[in-house]
Image (cartoon, each protein chain N blue to C red):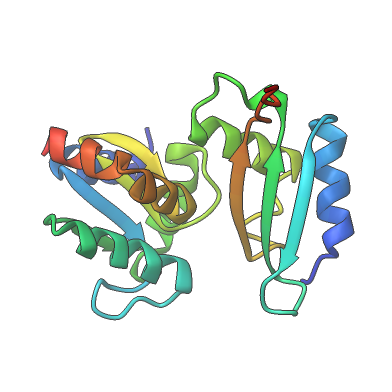
Length: 104
Length: 82
């Protein structure tokens, strides 16, 4: 594994809920990232964010790590959950609450 | 670089032939789309796999040439006969 892949792997494994996004939770830099943050805030869970705009290696590497071409990307307990569309679908159906509630 | 909605639909159908594709141009700039794709081939696949199948059909354009593609996937519902 390359250095970037190792760093991503550590972030994913060391944080129960981690969102790779553009910008920060306070200042998202993209509508999709903003939507992902809003969903997590609604759930009232604590989560970490990683701003891919601050780190070109992670920005590239995260796409390979999950075989997913876009950011944001949510990981819960080491598992890739999806991007903001999947988060929204799972939030609306109650699955996301269940997943995070059951696992954190 | 902008991409025509018809081209997105063509590429998805080329690799998922039974797909019913509905595309909306969200910002009117040819760069922000929402697509709903319904296909029997999604049956039994996780949402992640369903979206990955569409990304694969678009051959690496999502996240590059195509900035934003909001996706919704579904399996066709059997008709209810009463």
